[in-house]
Image (cartoon, rainbow, N blue to C red; front, side, top):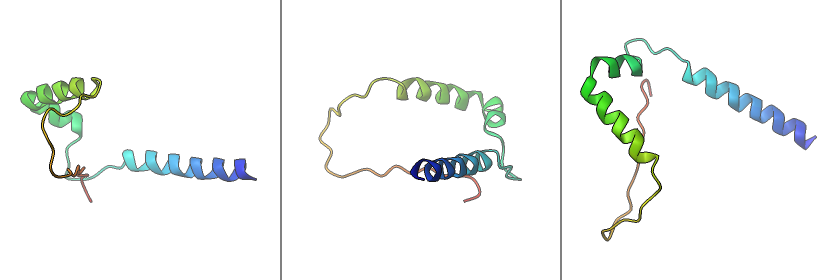
Length: 76
């Protein structure tokens, strides 16, 4: 019973995620189209991609406040 319920939950979650990621939003550029038209942004994106794949490093400064990380999605 538990395995069946887990399989149902995972299949629904997976199909929901894939449906959302393929959603077409009128009036918004596709990301690859944006990068193709903005070579400087492509360079920055490529550099960021390399940096975030490196092993983590400890901060070299004292951090007094917590940080907040936000992600902005088109259409939301």
